[in-house]
Image (cartoon, rainbow over all chains, first blue to last red; front, side, top):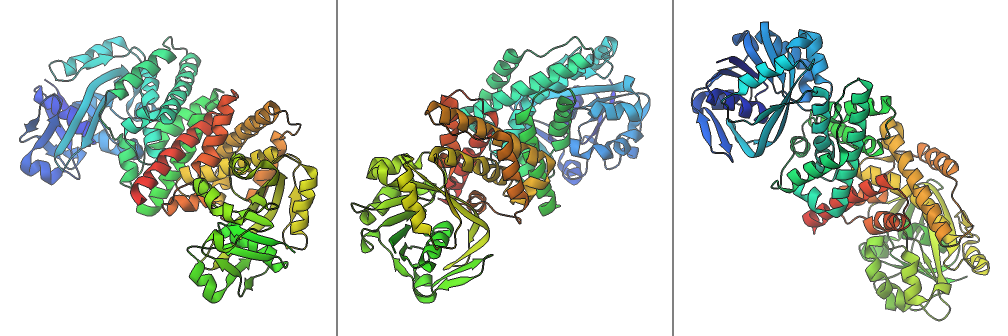
Amino acid sequence: MSTVAVIGAGAVGSYYGARLAEAGHDVTFLLRRDYDAVSSAGLRVESIDGDFTLDAPSIARRSDEIGPVDWVICALKATAIEEAQALVAPCVGARTRILVLMNGLGLEDRFAEWFGGERIFGGLAFTCINRGEPGCVHHLDYGPVTVGHHLDDPAELDVAMALWQGAHVEVSTTPSLLAGRWRKLCWNIPFNGLAVTAGGITTDRITTDPELRAAAIASMREVVAAGNADLEDRGEQARLDGDATVEEMMTLTDAMEAYRPSTMIDFVEGRAMEVDAIFEAPLARAQELGVPTPLMALMTAQMRALDRDRAAHHG
Amino acid sequence: MSTVAVIGAGAVGSYYGARLAEAGHDVTFLLRRDYDAVSSAGLRVESIDGDFTLDAPSIARRSDEIGPVDWVICALKATAIEEAQALVAPCVGARTRILVLMNGLGLEDRFAEWFGGERIFGGLAFTCINRGEPGCVHHLDYGPVTVGHHLDDPAELDVAMALWQGAHVEVSTTPSLLAGRWRKLCWNIPFNGLAVTAGGITTDRITTDPELRAAAIASMREVVAAGNADLEDRGEQARLDGDATVEEMMTLTDAMEAYRPSTMIDFVEGRAMEVDAIFEAPLARAQELGVPTPLMALMTAQMRALDRDRAAHHG
């Protein structure tokens, strides 16, 4: 069994941390908003795979109360990336590994600068999870996690798989973390983007409206092209298959209930959105490589303006 | 002097109708919201070219109180196109001409079906005019009107020019109404579209943000391409010059104060937006002709979804 610190125990961090605790790992959750609720009533997971509660999970208000662990799972919002180093550092010892379970491109590069690349992993959670009342997360659909290693070291991927053994999470590995990141963006850019820019709508509105569906697919194809150019430029073998990606992402999304992507929730609740990591960074990379991405550019411009308005009004 | 009926006396109709009245024409305004205000205090125009008030303009609540006139100026919102026939018909006699002073593509076709094409003109107002308090319009900037004839008859254009002679409006004619319509769309699609989809923002936010400015230009180029394909398909000689159009529209918009396009005002005030005429109709035509218009398609999908939400929330 491993010691695990969950830094950024929002919906995603709480859910996957709870799954590791359920499997017997010694998991401590860094909590802010939900500290008192979890302290008094435990951490509740309402899941399509069955509800469960961690009655008395280990929790902390500050990272230095946790100290060095085997695994840090960093599930902060990408908008908090500048705080990540300070929040994670107290939990990092000589042999600590860090799983970056966040949305967006380029985040592992930051962690590698701070803590060295050999201990950094990226986690790609394909799941529908929202926060419920304090101390409760709602796991609505899906749940697989794909793990990649920052240096794509196969031996390290085995170590990561060992952590999840016995946990009720479907975990697989990708030999190319970069390909995994772009694959995830193939969902996030169209669906987080349209859910916000079409007015704060759920995924079913996008999949069932012929014009929005076509826009989702067209923008997804830009992400595929950008990702493949990036992979080629970095000398990686992996490529995304455009048709297969479109088919898979649309089929998965068709099968979801009316889902509220995290960015859409941030939008309607007036919080900062993950524009840099999900939109700006991939767009900048595509433009650097000369890949035509007019739809990504338009949505990024819209997201940036909408996010600025939120910041101006709310914070 | 001519008898004129202004049908749809919102900001644009009231302004240009007032200019014709000022020039001595016998103008009657069909009013709903502002009837009582204008009845008691007149119609006030606050204009960068000098304020003036029509103290006791001729006004009516119903078109049949007006009866046949020389000129109908129809300045309804394009969302009211289905009501236009009934509102205009009582003012149409054997020799009546109709100037369709509305935004969007294909509106003159409808008027031609109802009243015959030879009496139909299109008016393209390039101006910044907003409604003020009841009975008052704010003319903020610009004001030129380009007039085209539905059948592009040069003799009819002379008749139209004669109407405006002596009025404080800069009027010119276009030998191709269709080219004029597309030229106007080169502003409306980028600026009305982005002003709404980037969150209800003013034009200066679009022109000064490099990403939004680039998106405005990129979408404008799509409109130029679609317009030229349409002109070619219909056997017209006129063409839009892409570079010149971009240069001109951006320069004009750079010089505006922070302007709220009409569609943006409709958006933030929760009213139906002119999505069909400004977005759907040009997009449908582009798609029919096989012109790639991914940005127009994305913005149209967003506008449609946002408009549906407004309809749902506000009735």
